Image (cartoon, rainbow, N blue to C red; front, side):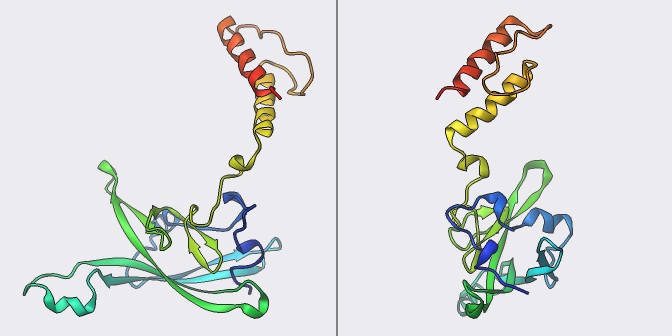
Amino acid sequence: MGGFGSGRYAASSRDTIEDLPFFGIKDWVAKGLIRPGNAFDLIWADEDGHPEASIDIRIEKVSSVHPALVGLLPAGSSVPDHLQAVLEYSAGRAPDDVRPITDAIALAQSPRGFAGQSWRFCCPGCARRVADLYPGGDFFRCRKCCGLLYRSQRETRQARGLKKSVRIRQQLGGTGEYGEPVPERPKGMHWRTYQRLLEQLAEAERP
């Protein structure tokens, strides 16, 4: 089984959110995986369904106070704990460079109004609380640390305009083909709506 850090498991400047595998804490919550002492794994498969990369994960309870400072706390004081996810996997930029990696990701709870608490990863790269982590080189980090954008953000203005043009033309009853005559106002559509769509169409098809 391969590792992370190379091939399709390594983020590059051309990659988008949709191009890379990731794991999200919402899925962990839904499956009841966030429990101290719990261990599980995540497996990614290739196009043929064969295992290609995996991560072993265990949830640990750790003290928020450094062991060397525990003795300085007032007598009878309780030491606050928090949870972390310890990731173990293989990573390397080349087959002969693959090495074992152990990385700890702190887990944090944030208030969510009447819905109680919601879990988040604390990205080790920037300390932001995030819902998803992605392979950025040898380690899993948040979208911003990996320099990832959404696919729609990679599109040029002209490409986005052409997509919008197709949607508007189809909304007006046309085929969506660029260059065909602008469809007449559909029956039942207000003139104000029709004029607004024509203005949006002109803007979308502006060179």
